[in-house]
Length: 431
Ligand SMILES: NC(=O)c1ccc[n+]([C@@H]2O[C@H](COP(=O)([O-])OP(=O)(O)OC[C@H]3O[C@@H](n4cnc5c(N)ncnc54)[C@H](O)[C@@H]3O)[C@@H](O)[C@H]2O)c1
Image (cartoon, rainbow, N blue to C red; front, side):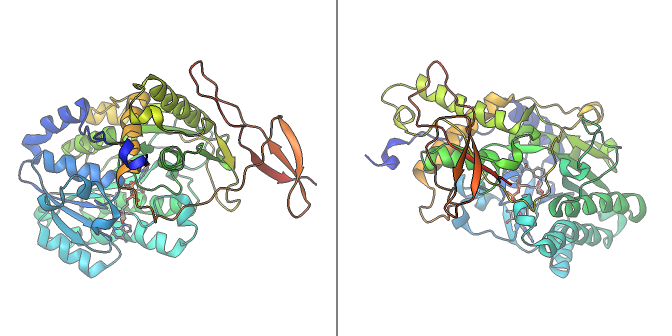
């Protein structure tokens, strides 16, 4: 039987209880207000545009790519026709000025970013800086050119990566910003300029420094940990991949509906104007542990699924593969945000725990890869897997160079299905 006929369950249980409550609380504020969401055909932007629409706002959804073929949330949930769709490049200053001036927006939620993962940013530094820094400037400048009473509030989606490598953890909003990677620095520049526009140029701004967001409809499969793992599992029947350089990383994780709740909280909080907020995770964890939890969790879901359900029949490899990473990437070992300020000033705290978020997320991808994933989508092919039983071993590569291979931890729960031999990692060549 083909995979397609196996999986038919509906993935969309949006919104969960917490987001539903926040939308209800926000309705009187947003009702009939014009709002602009940039990057609305992306992951977080799709959820946010949907929530704002649900709260009664008149949403303009802007993106560089609004084609239905990309399978964004706005198309998968037939919301495209409920909003004004504008295809525009955030780097096009004149066009952005016209859109902002014609739109009479109450609030601009700026989420568009040319590269939203560090691996892509390093491939096109100039384009990343133009989109991720100047994209914000174009919006803020357009707002500045309006009469003062007509200027929208501009909420800028920043990142915890602006803090960079730091001894001080969790990061607090007033500590030094040390992000130096291409993505990190491009976001950081806009983050600082948001304060400039607010303090010196009369445009109200709020900066939200977000941790790692996960959830349904994240179609950034090539680099992001959780979507990539879901594709490995549900499309390829494989084990999730862990980049070598992230073995010792720690990150915060937040379910996307909580991230949307944070935007709704700060947008309607007058005291938040001109402020910078961390958006902390509900879960702080080592990256390998996130994948371990994910493998165990999906394995458990599967073991508990009725024997005739599609999930019970899905075959995949319940282990983790460690794969080489780009040595040129600047990565931060620990990213951890303090959430005191957003709690005290905007009344926001995460409400969805990691496992509950993961459950909704896993069900979405199970459905996604069985129903609509384009079969022509480019795949990043993992290196071939030698079958190794030991711990550290030395093997010869094709070119005769000896390399160390490390046997990763095997995940074997009481209910785990039989596993293939463990995956491997190729470490540095031995001198
Ligand atoms: N997802 C996370 O974990 C996370 C964490 C911290 C910060 N952020 C920030 O939040 C924002 C949203 O992230 P996401 O995960 O939804 O990213 P995403 O990549 O899914 O969405 C970004 C959207 O921006 C659009 N875009 C790209 N270049 C553009 C341009 N020049 N003009 C107009 N649109 C353009 C893309 O088409 C895409 O739809 C980004 O600014 C990102 O830097 C995300």
